[in-house]
Image (cartoon, rainbow, N blue to C red; front, side, top):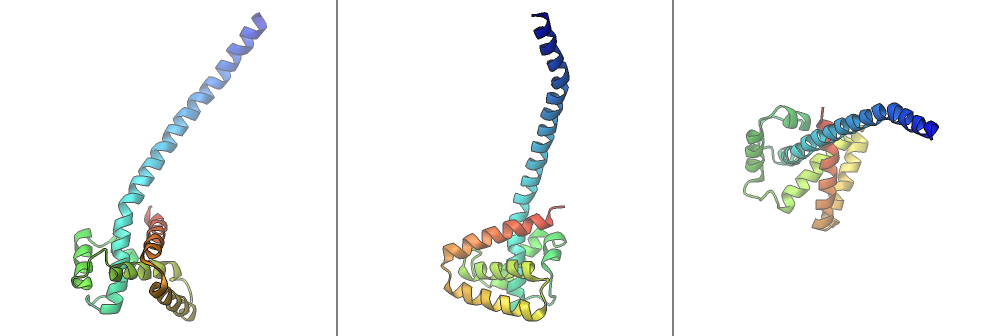
Length: 156
């Protein structure tokens, strides 16, 4: 009986600090996940607007400067970005098919930016054809996923 108590006490002494460390470590991990998640969720709408404005501006040339998505997300004031998108959309709603398609083009531009020009042009041409064929629900789901993944890039 004395041996069982000693073993149990020794086990508690050895593993209690480890358990406490695991709880602290788990707590820190949860805090990091929460901070990461909050930052990610805060970036998603900014990235979405940046994608929409980027593609809209490339097509409609409402702004004299050819902005890069990275600069739109990291450097431009959020209100300025929203106003620039509003001007570019010229009365179209943020929830319109036009805005959604611009968003998809902007988001995929970011993902394919490293391709050589010929491959990039080919892929973007395929994307534009798909945009004509895909139902809105599929385009919305694709945009949501693309922007969510893209926002991860901007978390530092």
